[in-house]
Image (cartoon, rainbow, N blue to C red; front, top):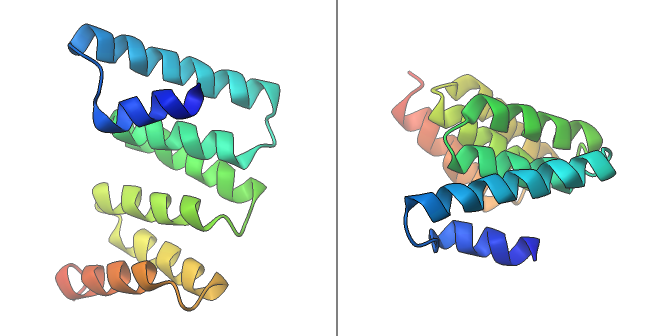
Length: 125
């Protein structure tokens, strides 16, 4: 059920703003329930972080990604999402640090190389 809701949310497949708002509230409840039932599950924090990001709650998303990473220090998806969130907040040095952490775990991660180089070329002088 949660995967179906996330797919609908990703596609913005809720007809009308009221339905979308209801869907977002439902997803947040599901994420919060998952965290409450298993607070040591990094995936639950990651999913809530993704939802917060989509809702524009970037600081909340960062907190969720931080928690997911604390629970699983090798959670590459959480590092990628946290780096993207930091970029959105213009924390370019923090994003580069995250990409460096990713590359320390997996030096062949092409997306981390690419995104890091983009930031270095555009924003760091």
